[in-house]
Length: 439
Image 1 (tube, helix red, strand yellow):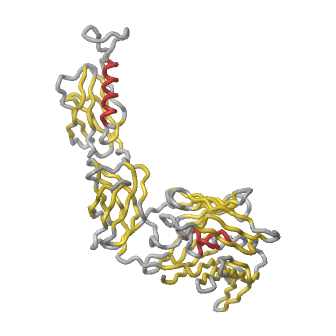
Image 2 (cartoon, rainbow, N blue to C red; image 1 turned 90 degrees about the vertical axis):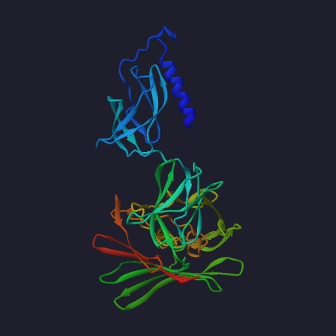
Image 3 (cartoon, rainbow, N blue to C red; image 1 turned 30 degrees about the vertical axis):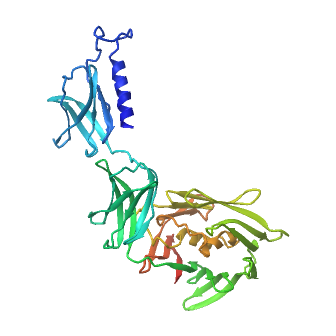
């Protein structure tokens, strides 16, 4: 790419030597009387300077605002200018460009562009594990570096592969959250700001998710999904009123799975669910591709197709006539689910890489009328979690206009699994709890 750019610059400089009548050669007069510098350039990039006052062997330097001088490599010199390379090590900022002792003008040096496109990497890894980082643009000799919270750098064993690079996490690497940088061609780029390193990957499965909200007076209302993976598999959604130490079960719906994989609503305590029964088609990897749902009031099941993006995130559930639910992901994070939006402003806020998505856990409790949407999540069939934990939730205002923004706080267990997500609306406190069992 650099060779192509240099050839283009040579052509440009050659054209600049032509006179207004298109003549070139000895009789053509160079029209440049003032030095022309670009306003900015990228670190490690090429710069075209147009000027007819350069000597045959020019010495070009760049001087920072603190007076430090950097010699640059001149690659092309013609009668009407030259091309030089900006040192890749230059810190972004304003520099004076000089030819010998002559000041030619100032330039803004910008950070070098990330050379890798289509970047894909895991959110964490176990010590001693080799991980794959996919992308186009990695070059032989590049190195991945982990940087801890104190700024200590740990260069990793890095090898070029057909799809990107493979990186080995050392056995003695301390547990924690790291930033991952790529060192290539003397330059540095951030690949991830929240990479988790674990000594032991503890796998757990979701057994219950509960939503606590204010009720009447000092009472609290708890809405829960209970997941029973024994034979028969049973999913139960219940509503309980909590008054001090006393709990009163108000209503529950129970879905039971038979030997054919059909879930049937066997106890309809809420009398609000649209889904009387449901069955799922799954591919060889266990991913749901289709669901047949018997909707209340219909004689035949309605087929729903499940669509995923290239990264495996669920983007749409559609009936034969319309999109029934759509989901929006940005940079590997679930940002919109029905009429609720989520923001992710803290790259370091992450859970255990095997933990279920907290947003899906919360929204499964909002899908009481159409629970077939959340069954694959509750059962672990759909286990694609957001790369980070959301920092803010935006919901429609109960007043009917506008929105309510709520900052989210979390509790974690000793293994890094989120056990609670809480927020405040006005003077009221809300909380979602996640209960796990070991696999």
